[in-house]
Figure 1 (cartoon, protein in one colour):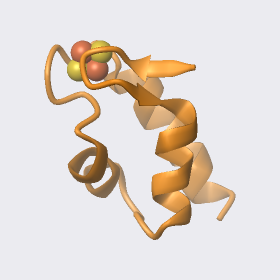
Figure 2 (cartoon, rainbow, N blue to C red; figure 1 turned 180 degrees about the horizontal axis):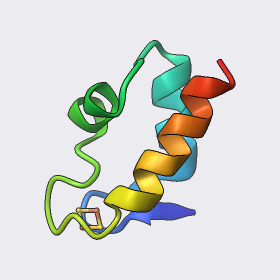
Figure 3 (cartoon, rainbow, N blue to C red; figure 1 turned 180 degrees about the vertical axis):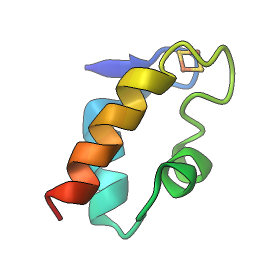
Figure 4 (cartoon, rainbow, N blue to C red; figure 1 turned 135 degrees about the vertical axis):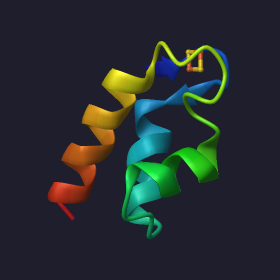
Amino acid sequence: MYVCLCKGVSDHKLRATVEDGARSWREVQGETGCATQCGKCAPVAKAITRDAIRSE
Ligand code: FES
């Protein structure tokens, strides 16, 4: 599902970015552009990213 509508970033994309080596929210944000526009998706996107990093 899309987490970030502004930038068209899905939960899958967030997890895939962590799998590809991103190790922080800042890195995931930099790679995907997630939460760089309206910012409404930030809390959910951060939670998904945190979970993904924890389970790496
Ligand atoms: Fe992600 Fe707007 S929904 S920046």
